[in-house]
Each structure stands twice: as structure tokens, then as C-alpha cells.
Length: 485
Image (tube, rainbow, N blue to C red; front, side, top):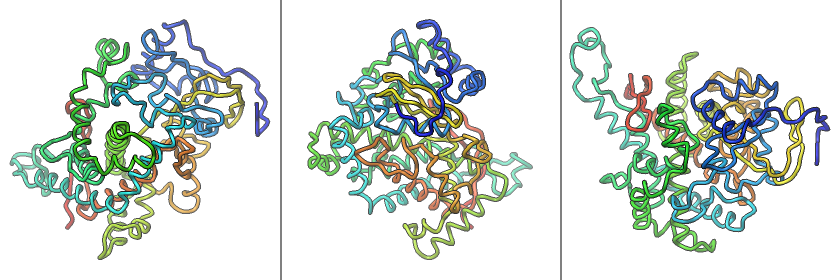
């Protein structure tokens, strides 16, 4: 064992797993239907590291026992591949059937030590780099189509009798524009048009609903869908959901990618990947990893900016964007002159990371350090990090619970980026075949900055209302959307 700081190991990892099966079930119920699941255990044990069960667990899922890591000092061990393995931990303590991915273990489930990891990660990175000159124009074109949808809603007649008999200027129609569905179309349109040379939204060849119908059973056992326990527990958390339920939808996605993905699939040939395996990895990379992530991150960005009221953030963003763009366009040089926008994106990634959980299984015995103490970890133990608490660590971040859009500006702000971990690694790190950091890390930040900058070239300000449920998704309605004067 090694212990760089020579902290004394004074006690075993606190916490308990409870009786077999029953302990797992009780923790699962508390996780999904209780309050402050991690915080109350942290306070009870006086530690940011403790033992607990994580969903889904027995009797029909694998071992639920984990050691939770909730601070900035312990959490990064999940990226140290000399100490942990990332093999088959993408969805936590269980692995969905490979039926969901064409019979293949796709890149996200491979450990860095597996030979195929390097092949598939290089392939994914080639997909991004080979299209680098298309991302900005395709995203802006897709966004323009989205703005047209919002504008069409804005131009619908407003019924009189609402708010002072309709005399208040700027009223939205009775059915106001909705944020999430249009952002989903923008993401799907620009990803498929860029990578496959075909817009999947044309004729609803593919839809956000269809893609998420395929994604949902893979992650349902570890998520709270907001249903009552008497429905959700037997339906989603007791046993794996069989692939056959969503097989027709997945086959539809695969057919679209196969029909239009010859150029993208051919990029796998130099990496020694067979076309069929490349095809299914391409579907997962674009639809699950990238599209799924953007449709979480983008609404979170808009909502946090909408709710912020300490200063006129939207006015400052609008002025910064238009000053940087000038008479030119949204390019790398212009983006470099938008430090507030960049910091705002990073702050959303800190306070609402698109992926909340990270797992890793200890490969060796070692000593794990927190800010104040150390614990012995044994080979074979599963480690679990909950990012929304880790990136609110008060030892690192001032006023960690507050959304502070200027947090990452300036030299000190740049230094804080090493403590932002949304991409399965620090924001200051670089994805490579030798690590498990998301190959799309830089891409996700870039396209999010581009979208938000482009938005403020078309609109002056906006305000979002409370979310409501539409189908299986939460949707934010616009209560205000002012076009550029």
C-alpha cells in the first residue's frame, strides 16, 4: 500500500450494508423516496467516505455494496487506473444486456486495459476530428431551424383577456413555446447531419422520444422516474427490463445509421474494427453518450441562466457575445472573447453535472485519503462517487451551493477547472486511449458555448417557467422570449 501524505488510518470505512437483500432494499427505497440520502449518512458517520448500498441491488441484480466518495480529495481515485478498473461499471453495479447494443460490449463498458478499448476510443475520436470543420455551421443551421419553431409559436395570435385584457406588451400565446423539445431537435438534427450527412428529424425518421425509449430501460434500474413506489419498484427496480420491449425502436435507429453512415463507419477500418461492431458503437456514441448528454446539459444551462437574478446576466452575456462576434461569425476567435459565457457553461457543468455517478472497482489494496483522514480499501471493493456533492465541496468551492456564473473567470477561476469532473476526469485533463475520460469532453463544451452564443445573436432575453411532465420528459415553457431588437 502507498500513502503519499502519510495520514494515519485510524478507523475502518464507516457505514454498514445491513442484512442480506433487506439492507439493499431499504437503502434503495431511501435513495429513491427519502431525502438527503448521502448528506444524512455523511453527517451520521462524520465522514465523506462510507459504506452503503446503491440501486438496483439484490435479489435480481448483482451485489449493491459500494464505498461512497463525496469529497474532492477521495473522488479522483476513480480516474486512477493503476488503482481501479472501469470495466463494466458505466451503469454502476449492473450491466444491461448487450442486446441493447447489437450484441457488443460498446466502448463505455470497456476497461482501459482491454485491447479493444484503444481501438474503439480512437475511432470515436476520429469521428469528432474528421468533422471538425462542420460542427459550427451545422449546429448554427440546426439552431436556426429551432428558432423558426419558437418564432412561429411567438407569432400565434394571443387571446385577449389574459393579463389586463391583453394590454401588456410581449405576452406569449396561450400555448407558449417549449424549450426542451426544440433543443432536442437541434441536437439530433446537427449530430446526424454532421456525422451521417442526413438530418434525422426530416420526416421524423428518428425522434428524441424514440431514442430515449431505447435508452430508458438501460438506466431505469438506477434512476427515479418519479413514479409511485408501488409502481416503480416492481416495474423498473426489481429485475432487468428485457431488450425485446424496445427492440423495434433500436432496429429503427440502427437502420437509419446503416443507411446513412457509410462514411462514418468507414473511419473504423484503420482501427481494425469490423463494420457491424463499428455501427453499433457509432449508434451508442452519438445517441446515448452525445445526444443523451446534450439533452440534459442544454436545458440545465438555460434554466440556471433564466433563474439567476443577482445581476443582469443575460444582458452581460448578450453584450459579450455581440461584441465578440462583431461583423463576423461565431468562430474560435469570437468564442475566445467570451469569458463570461465560457465560465457560465463550466458553472452549469459543476453544479448540475450531466452524469451524476461514477464507479470504479479497486484492483489493488491501497489507502484512500479524504481532506482529513485515510481509509484502507481492499481489492475488489466497488467505489462510487456522487458528483453533485463532490463538486459542491466547500473545501474547494466558495459558496458551493450557489450558481455563480463568473466562478471560472480569471486565473483563479481557471485553476478551479481541475475540480470539475463531469467528463469522467478533470476538466484540465485530455481524453486519450490510456484513460476513460469522455472522448467528447472538449466537443460538448464547445458546442454548448456555440449554441448559447448563437442564441443571443437571435434573442435579447428569455424567462422559463416551472417544468411540467410531457410524456416521459420534463419540459420548461418559456414565459418570456424576446427576439433581438
